[in-house]
Length: 187
Image (cartoon, rainbow, N blue to C red; front, side, top):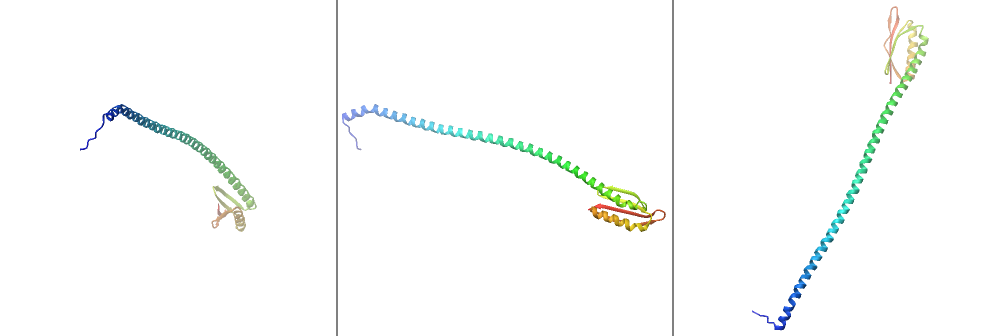
């Protein structure tokens, strides 16, 4: 074994340095503690900053979501109003179209009556029935020779008005003349 021998002065110097070394160690520990605390403070500041930024982003997103929900509600209200308006307009247009069809039908029937006027003396129009888009006429014609003229008038009227004409074969009945059933419907 090798022993290290020190002189007395070296030993004294060594003994004098012991408190100083302890103080240096304490200083290093304090420095280390300061570094650790400073590092923790920096980490805490970064975490606090990140938390603040996250909170700001959350607040912005919450405000944006709220705005979007308000816009969605406004759009729903607008669409509901527009749907009601469209339904009312559709109903109004439907009524107007019905009135127009009724007027047109009345005009067409008036035109038919005007065309049938020359046959008033020789024909008896027993029924003229108008149901939706179908017109049924039952007539008795006293003079069979008027039948082709009446048919021609009805065919011309139906063609001009855009209707289809169907006549049943005429039936001659003693005492009343020729019985004729006519059916006209919209194409």
